[in-house]
Length: 241
Image (cartoon, rainbow, N blue to C red; front, side, top):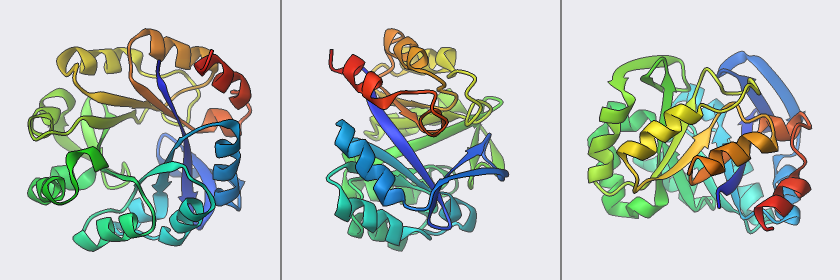
């Protein structure tokens, strides 16, 4: 059964969502991300995906205090990403309660640093963020597209022991137009050992059921929650039926 991971994206300490990664298309949903996280926990969720969008844009962690508020208020297993570029950044994330961290840009720009973090913290605490636009890996808060094609890009990291991969199809993110199921199926066909986390476009419980039927191990979803497209209690009851 697919793992369900609600998401909280943070700008200026607020819970927000963007559309297609565009900072100009921002909607604020709550001034208290820790309360949103607490509500997820009360329903029964165990995992939470937190993205520091200020950090992704600034290229260093910005909202570490919000991370601490969430991890102190809840027992959720939080994976945290956005702006983790240095040894200090990853230390700050773990010191403020992150159970796992999602690393994207550094895997492209400084792969040796990424591999050193695997050695220092263990591959099980790292999630490789593979954000894709037009088939190419995108970096630095989705503001830059690299020349790297997705499937060949993943090989080196899988060979190094990475099993957790979060893949966001940027053209789908925040659109509520359905997830890129075919893309995720292609990844799983090439790398069946991965704990692949699908992200982007989820608009309904049916979308999550379709991902589950396609054999995708996990899904991150956010906007569909905040826009009232998904009833979390109904989703949780389906997950545990």
